[in-house]
Length: 350
Image (cartoon, rainbow, N blue to C red; front, side, top):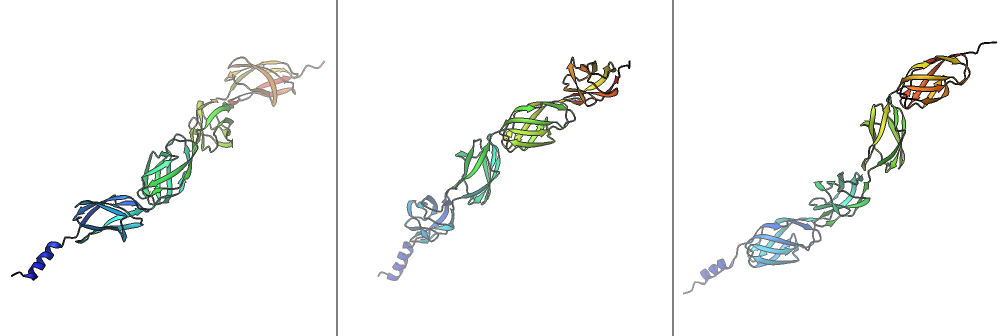
């Protein structure tokens, strides 16, 4: 005789399947808009009746095998538990994170050289999981996500103003502009020489001089400088010796080198003859050193006409003046010499 009670229990035990087990969701994050395909791995996936992302049903799913399902994520926000439902029950949840599209609000600095290489800090939101940073369509040389609100990126080479954007799985941020600055150039230096003691006001003419951050005379900063216009700077030379490279630095880089020469002060060792008439016209030979660049000869404060014969000799025409001793000096690009005495002798009375 058939035991209906025992048969029902056996049939029941055969018909009840175990609940599915979900081990991973790949990828485990995606756009807030959903509609991306996700692979679910696990076991016991036979007889699937549903896939859920949090409380929202998947937009669609396809059982691939008893251990794998592909599902289309619905829209959502934040972190949700993905579950699989079969006749045997509902699986354990595995976390899936909806990633919001990034927003970019600020760059620091906002400009750099056209050659690239500037380290730029990007500030905004939604930076977790960022997959790319672009400068005008060119990928950053490199970037690091510091936090959900901060990224450090290295600017590639570029020109002009370019939009910087950040991309993650949910999309691309709006742009914030970065400005590439051309390196400055120096065309003319005037004067191109001065005394070793410094202090000479030097005019630099060139291009792209706006935003100058440094003027250097052979590695020594200018005593001071003023950017007069995008094509002109006035700088005060520091002390130095010899010929040095004069450069200008801006955020765009460092200029070509122009030559500036420090000239030692002249030496006046003798005046011959040492005396002459009080009237103008006497030829006086000045002997010394470093006289080649002589720009002035003075008897007292009165300038005299002169001719440079060599680095050691200058012939001057003594100007008229009161009888008696008067200091004679020579001025060159290197400065003014120590004085030597010339004595004016009055004409004898008749």
